[in-house]
Length: 164
Image 1 (tube, rainbow, N blue to C red):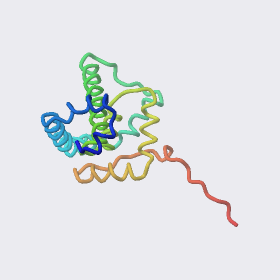
Image 2 (cartoon, rainbow, N blue to C red):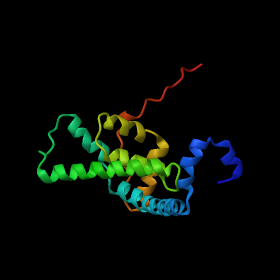
Image 3 (spheres, rainbow, N blue to C red):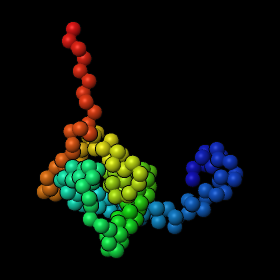
Image 4 (cartoon, one colour):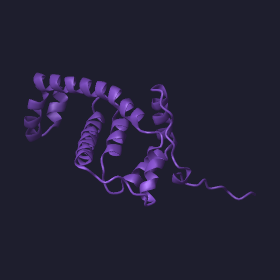
């Protein structure tokens, strides 16, 4: 740690920070950074390319009251597994905000996997951002998948000014 930084820190903080700056911890963080970076480079495009093109429009059937299959034991287990994977990706995405990796895409995929109240509204809000949709569709195109099909009703209407 640089001397000027040590002098700036209060003694109680310095005493707690020094063990974290040991060579073993720094090497571990470096290895973790490389592993999460590689995992995000491989995992994020993998998951985004596995979404069905009608991921958003197909789920509209449920919202319209068209019944879904009844949950069996295997379906429940897979749903729990999907949520655990989503939470893991959310945690890794937050870590990638300060470590190398594709933080925003990892957070996006994690949020899409986790079930929470208001998820559909959040997904619509995210996918309505043109740069998000174009980035996802570019990744899907590279893996030979068709682009996602969002509903036009999710996008806010364009406000047009009256003619002068």
